[in-house]
Structures are given as structure tokens and as C-alpha cells.
Image 1 (cartoon, rainbow, N blue to C red):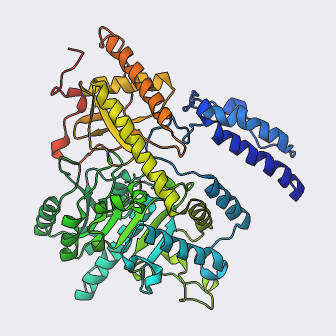
Image 2: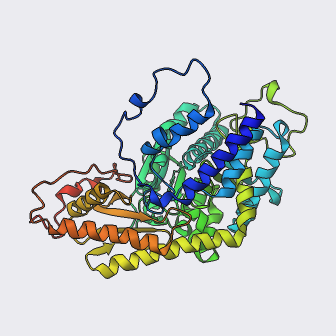
Image 3: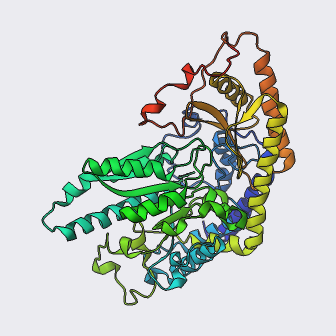
Length: 514
Ligand SMILES: *Cc1c(COP(=O)(O)O)cnc(C)c1O
């Protein structure tokens, strides 16, 4: 394809994208394909001869769209929002065209410098402590990572190295592997699965601690675990606290946890992947109280801040814990201006990196801080509207307080009935949501996801849920024809003795089966 062809098909593609997003409501939010649907539609091998791009464009609707879940449809309420906006898409287009690999300042100074500036902008928008900003002229600053999961792993590895170094310094004869074998990290039973996975990848114990009745991890729980583990000869070294858990958007108590981490010299990482975006609004910042104890903080603009995947921002107070801990420095990566600005290759696991700050810059300039705040507040208002409809209906209960764009609700019946309701909703296919299972309670998560979701969209989704509920509760015997819907269990604690009973044996609430 030459530049003329790119102009022609580029315009067609931009039109296609604009139409797709503008009219996305009209599409079925979930695909109806079965595994392997694509194989018969495509040849077994790549084409020997070049095809025309017209042919390629035709196949988008024919082959790709039928197997696409439309995450940006206002009828999509699963997981959490996935970021998207036109300025962000344009930023990524330009980034793809420049196509630099910005692992050091010298490989493309704009790539590093815009990231330094935009992560400072974001940090200031959220009122992060000064030490997290590049402009503080200390060792702190922000960096764009791919995902929150990668960030947790990186922080855990940095914490591991820091603790090992401390013990080595105290007694140089101690064996590093011996120290690592004694390390223990903590998170709440509500933490994202990526935290447990970081423990596995980093080859250290990761203990899930029981959260309180509001699914919040409390200081006393951490203190007891630390004491018990120290008595066993283990070395507590890391805590990943969550602000806005995946299951129910619960908040760990940083003001209680922080001082314990400080006293025990444990690395405190804060994972605010979803809820972090809301901190651009001052009314949500009370959840951040205690953030001054954190070594690292991260959130995902690619979730709830209008930025396309991938863009997960992490801030660190002392970047030398990353830069010095994992420094390999072959001659071909060096340059003559080292040390004046970050060489971001030291701040991440991969070497190569995209020019991701462009989409952030485009979005922030196009919306302004006030536009971002307005977007967040609108989503929170819509969640409240949905909560009211659910409560007014009388047959439902709301499981956790609705504080942001997520409503967790269930039928006032046994878990099994709510599980069947999800089956009805998914079979209906007009909207999409996923369940969670926390503390033996099975519930549905209704997340406001699409940028342009309106009150009418939320009413529509509620009507779908209502009609599915009517249909379900009319069925005389629920036992006949019971169809098991596999539970996408995003959050079930696995290590806690108290959590052993399965929801299916739950008998504490009336069951329409009986
Ligand atoms: C979504 C989510 C993650 C994972 O985010 P990725 O960027 O996909 O790794 C981590 N923590 C929380 C609380 C989340 O909600």
C-alpha cells in the first residue's frame, strides 16, 4: 500500500470506526458464535498473492464483527469500563505512525518527555503527594505500564530486592535464596487475582487476609498476620492494598494499614486500577487518606479514564528501587545524556515501549480536567439511578454501597436463583453483565461502561433485567429444567478456612426451589 492507498483506506477506516461507535447500540452486545467459528471462514494459509484492501475491508463485518463483544456498547455492563474516546484513538494512530521504541530518552526524546509531563499532570489532577511527581525533583515520578498486573509484579520484585538487600547488609553471609524463602506478602481476600499471581511469578508467599463486612482490609487483621508470621520466622515485606476492588469496588483502610507497613518496613503498593480515575474529583479523595504511606500507587486510565488499552500509570516515590535493582547496562543501550531524564527501560519489565503518552495528552487536552470530572460524575449518577430502580422494584437487594459506577445486586432469594437470573439475562442477550461471589454471596455486577451511556440506556437495561426476573419467577418449579450457568468466579477467596462452604449449599435465605 502506498501513501495514496493509505489516504483512501485510512479515510474509509476512520468512517467505519466513527459509524461503528456512533451506532454501536444497534448491535447485539454479545456475540453468538461458538468456539472455532472462524476456522471455516478463513483459508488455512496466508494468501500467496497480495489481495486488494477492498477485500480486506469487506471481511470486517463478515468475519470479525460476528465474533466481537461490543465493550463500548451502552448495553455492556460486565467487568469494568474499558477506556475509549476519539482523541485517544487519534493519539494511538499517531503513535503507531511514529512507531518509535522509546526505551531510553535518546531513542526519541519526545516519547519520554511527554510521558514525564503527562504523568505529572495526572498526578496533580488527583492530588497525589508531591514525592510521586517528577517535578518534585526527587527520585519520584510516574511511568506508563501496560497493565496494573504488571505493575504489581514489578513492585513486588522491587520490594523483594529491597528487603533482601537490607538483610544482606545486616549479615553479608546470609544466603539470598534463604531470605527469599522467608518472605511473605499480603493482600485482602478481595484483591484482584493478579496479586496472587504476582506472588507465584515472584516466587514468594502471598497471603490473602480476611476483609471486614464491607470487604475492606483493616489494620488489626494485618497486624495479627504480621505478628503470627514473624513468630514463625517469616519476613513480612509487601502489602498490596486495593482502592476499589474488582468484585465490589471496596476500599482497604489505608490509614490503618499504612502505619503498620511503615513500622514493619513493608512496601505498600496501592492498586486503584478502576477507582483511581475518580480521584480527579475531590469528593472521592477521602478514600485516598493514608496514601502518604505508599511506596507505589497505580491506576488504569485504560479503564475509567477514556484511554484505549493499554495505559496503566504507576507512580513511585523512589525510582532507584527500580532503576538500581534491575540494572543491566549493555553498551548498545547507553547514550550520552543519561541521568537528566528517566530512561524508562529501567522502570518496567520489557525493553521496548510505545509512545502511549500521546493518547493521554490528546485526551486530556480535548476534555480538560473538567470534562474528565464530568464524565466520572455522570457515570456515578447513572449507577445511582440504576440502584434506585433496583431498590424500587422490591425483589432485589443491593449487596454493597454504591459509591462509583458499579452496582452489586441480587434477588432476595438463594444464590441459586440469582445465578438463574443471570442465565436468563445472558440467554436474552440484549445486555451483558457478570457475576461475583464474595463471602458466600452470589451477586450480579452492573457496571456503567460506555462513554455515552444515557439514562435511557440504564432504563433499558433495567427493563431487560426486570422482564427476565418476571419470566424466571413465573416458572412454577425452578428445579425442572434447571440449567447450570458456569460461574465466572472473579473473586472467590481460596485460602481462607472460613470460606470453605460453597454457595450452592447456602441455606440462609429463602429459596424459591423449596
Ligand atoms: C482490572 C483490575 C486489575 C487488572 O488490571 P490490568 O490492567 O488488566 O492488569 C487489577 N486490579 C484491580 C482492582 C482491577 O479492577
